[in-house]
Image (cartoon, one colour):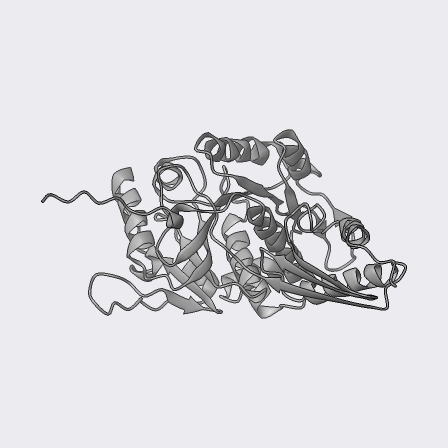
Length: 363
């Protein structure tokens, strides 16, 4: 008779701390089933975030740990992924066709937020999710150029708009509807109304994530998004220097006030490596993003280098994750995207669909 027991199996699984969830799989409620038959054990794990090739690596790691247990003759681990809708601000309902909205924000312009947004969207898609990207910068839309998609969107009924597909991602931007050099000379209410129309009139198709690239600052558009748009979580992009961090804190505080979870902080342009001599230098300082994450008790999602290829690829309509998916920088974006999605997977689920609508009828 085998000496293998369920507590032994659980202990072996708990000993592995998932690098994206930052906790063991049982604490993260990813363990779905354990079956023990003599000396054989079969374990089923379900991750709540897209993870590309990671499930195979995870399964192999857990199988190795289980086979090391006394009495185990065979161990099989199955890892699947299921992305669900998560809770949004009180009083708001999820958008039709969209499970989760992730806002990418920065308090200051020029920190590479749009480049980060498009590459995070592409990274989530590369890992197996259905992803959309909304360019919320009405005054300075940049996503059409970054995606290399300059065509006008189609409308089958004259009321709703079909998203523009680029690099496998559904996208929408005011930039698709105007000439690239046309200035948007609109007051705040007009800009916010345009954003709501772009968001709600676009026929998003079964998205796991809609990434919203916000303009810098904490003005009308950010306020509209935080109060009227059902946001599941926010990612804050900053650079290491103090002035950028000061403004990034304002963006973080804005989301905290409207009870939108902060998924984490991305530090862009953290280090420059000379393409000629290989010398590494922290041009904008070092460690600012990590210190900010520690100060506000949130996740430091990762850092990105100051690399001319990232800028050139985005300017040419071929973002890094799309044009060099196996490269080092694309790998950084994918790890950051997984950490953000894993943080969201740990947040509260959306149960609004379980509550019936109450209709009062007059006899």
